[in-house]
Image (cartoon, rainbow, N blue to C red):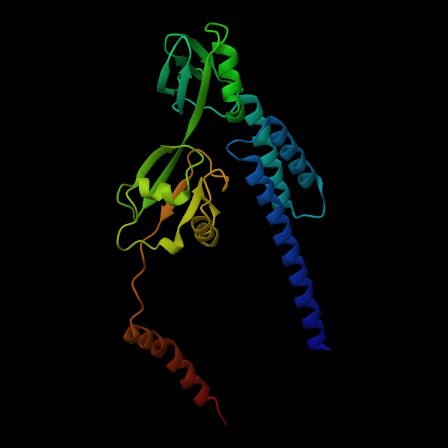
Length: 264
């Protein structure tokens, strides 16, 4: 009877655990799709609606529902504010009556200055809308221009690399290229334990990082945002056999002694 109850309890826990994992995976999938560097307004609105449905569902625990509510709010704020913050940099090329090949910086008020033409406000503009916005603004002043605009993503590489710190790269940059731009791992780097952190929360575990490097995944593919941190830890010291035996003796021998003493 007891064994049956234990089996039933374990089965129930397994079902609950698998359900929680499925819900967490669903939240993670929506988050990655909606935080894509090139996500459109329609895609972000759709993701916000999906988070709303997750938050309203009683099939999930309160913790996951709270996460879904937070994500939905953040997405709607993104639609209002746009993707560009003061200090962001944009690679801009303009060809026509005016020739520009420059990197411009977003100033106070979320504006950029296109040299020789005009200032352009970027409040409410998504990255996916940047070229359309710039083309509409610039053709009011200069006709028949062609342009390309590539926002630079600002990510950090900290830990066991040659040049730790923040770097600006296009979202199409592969993760292994980001590491090399930071000078590459140092000799004692644990490259199989790399993680990506956002606001003290690990968003990409080491298993996914290893797979991403092997497959050539880009920052956009991984849903990495401005300000995310790539952490490269050092390798831990190898276990010394004598130290292991000492630890075993400290804990195991007293237990054996108690066992022997209590034997009839």
